[in-house]
Length: 632
Ligand code: BTN
Ligand code: 3PY
Ligand code: ZN
Image 1: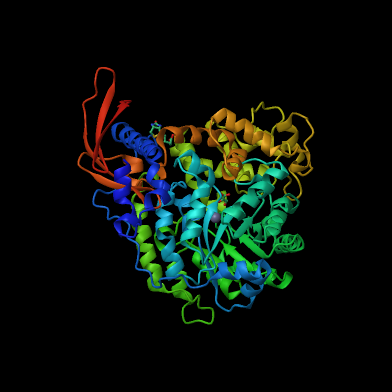
Image 2: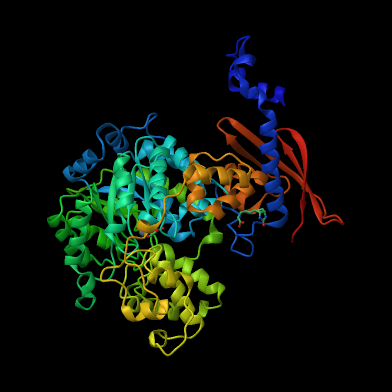
C-alpha cells in the first residue's frame, strides 16, 4: 500500500520530489485508513449490487442509454468577482443597497435546493451539485445567489443519502467562491419540524454562516414575526444577509379571503423591516400569487418599505412565469427561478425563459443565455439518474388554488396518500386539505404548519370524516399528535389565533399557550449533549456534527452508525449509489481530494447455504472479495 501511495502521489509522478519527500509527506503513510474506507465503500457497493437500494426497489429505473452529465467549458479560469465579494468586503447592508440601485433583475437559481426538493423528493446527491458549482462561478457570475442549502435538504442528506449536509455546503462554497450561497431557514424551527430552544437556533445559524451560507431566507410557518427574531438576530450577528420573509397565502385581490389582504402583508413587511431584515423575502411556497396580485402586492410593498424585495414562487398552476414578469414590472429587485431542466410544475418557473423574456429590456438580467443552456443540459442528464424519485404533476393544475399545498409538500403528501391506499382519492385529500385550513382559521401552510394540515387531511379522508363532524363536539375524534401540538401553541400563533372551538375540542379543554414557544424552552447544554452523543455513538463529533445532532438526534445517530459500516459513499457516482454495479463495470470514486479509488466489479457469486454472496472486486489493481448477506 505504501508503494502504491508513493507511485500515485502527484509530487512523485511529477518528478518534483526531493530526498526528504517521504519524511515530509505523511499521507504516504495513511494507507490503513484508506484501506479501511475502501473496504467500507466496497461493502456498500456489494450490498446494493446484491440486494438493491431500499429506496429504489420497485421504482422506475433510469433509461439505460442515459448520457453521463457533462460539465460545460469554463468561460474564465478564475471566477470573476460577484455578490460574494460584495458581501465579504462591504457587508450585508451594502448588498441590500446595491440590490436597490440595480436596474437589472437579480436572479437566484434554486435548482440545488427547492428545484429537486419540489420535483425529486429532495433526493439530489452532493456530488451532482459540487461537480457543476465551478461552472456556475465561471459562467454565470452575475447570479444574485444560488440556493443550495436548508429546507428539507438537511435531513434528507443524512436520512436517505447517507451524506453530511455540511460537507456539501463547504464543497459548493469552495467550488463557487464568487456567488452568494443561500439557504432556507424555518426560523425557530431551524431545518426541522419543531420549535427548538433559542440557543440551538443560534448555534445552528452561527455554524451555517461559518460553513458557508451567505443569504438566510428566514420565514415562520405561521407568519409570526415574534417567532422569527431569534433566527434573524443570529443572522445579523453573523454579518450575513438576513432575508426576513413573508409567506404568501390566499389571494390579495379576493374579498372572500380578506384576512390576507394587502394591508396584512404591508403590516408584516414593516415588522420585518423594523426587526432588522436586510432584504424582504416574498415566499409564495404554493404558487398562489397570480400575476395581477403580484403586480398589486409588490407595488404596495415597494411603497411601504425601504428594503429590496426578493420574490419566490412555484409553477404548480402553470402561470408562475407571468407572475414573475408582473413582479418585475412592479419593481421587484430579485426573483427565484430553477434551471430549465429542473423547472416547472411544483418547482420554480424556468430560469432560461425568464432571462430570455427580460433580455433587451431595461431590466435585462445580464445572464448569458448560452451559459444557462449548457448548465441546464448538465442538469437534464443529472435528473435522468433520479427517475425513481419523479412523482410529479403531469400537467399544470389550477387545483392548487383550492388546496394551497406548498410545492415541496405536494409530491410528499401524494406519496403518503398512496402508502395509505388513498391514491385514487387524491382529489378528496385536496378538498380535505382546504377544509382543514379553514377549520384551523385559514392559516399559512408551509413547513411545518403544512405538515400538520396534511396529517389532519389524510386522517379525515381515511376515516371518512367531514369538517362538520370533526368540529362537532358530540363526535369523538382522535387527533394526530401534530395537530394537538400545533393547537397547543407549540409552533407559535397565527394571525388572529386559532379558533376557540377547534382548540377546545382538540385540547379537550386544556389551555393552549400563546407565548413564544422558545420562551419556555430551557437552553440546551451544548457541551453536555456533545459528550453524551459521543459516548453513545463512539465517535468524535465536530461542531457541524453537533448541530446536526441537535436538529435531528435520531436521524443523525442512524447516519453516524451507517457511516461506520459504509464509509464515504457520497463519493460514489449516483447510479452506483442507487443501483450498485454490474459485473465488468468500472467506476472511480474520489474519497478525498486526489485520493481516488478505481473500482471494477468482476463477478458476483451464487448465494451460499449461509445466505451469503461473494462479490469480487478489483480495487486499484488489487483483487478484493466482499461477502454480503443476500436479503432478497
Ligand atoms: C435507507 O435506509 O433507506 C437509506 C440509507 C441506505 C442504507 C443502506 S443501503 C445498504 C444497506 N441495506 C439496507 O437495507 N440498508 C443499508
Ligand atoms: C421548506 O421549508 O422546506 C420549504 O420548502 C417551504 O416552502
Ligand atoms: Zn419554494
